[in-house]
Image (cartoon, rainbow, N blue to C red; front, side, top):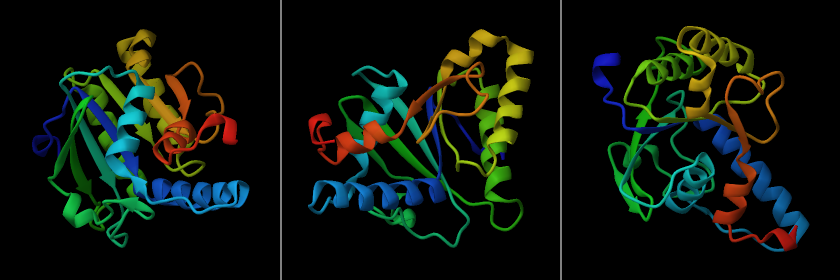
Length: 199
């Protein structure tokens, strides 16, 4: 697997199940709260806001977006573009740089959880990765991901945690010393055009 991956300087690992679950639940909640429909999520716009939250600045950045799914999932629900097959190998350019998409499935060999952890480990071990953003499925393998990060810190030094950011809807329990944390909510709200005063 390692031979097939040429990591970019900035890597975003996304568990598609998490993204679909988050987009659907937040969209429903916000529609009820605001009293109007919310459009499909503009994927390049959201990724730009997420990258800004991860610390990227405008420029010629390369961002590798790795979408990990179980093979049964065919689309990013509530997103545009959505079809995973169409996204594979595609790229888009924003003021932050180029976002290149890679759709990866374990193909029945391992679980999505194991694949996510393996890819996170490979990206951490790559000297060329300057920023690793993680969107794991909450409560499913948090503890195992924390173990991977802890082992990495022990081998490389705690300061290396500054190049890792873990996105979720809630703070990671007992994970504050491992890496940076941020909420994925803010980037989603921005991409949907929702202002803070509306909330």
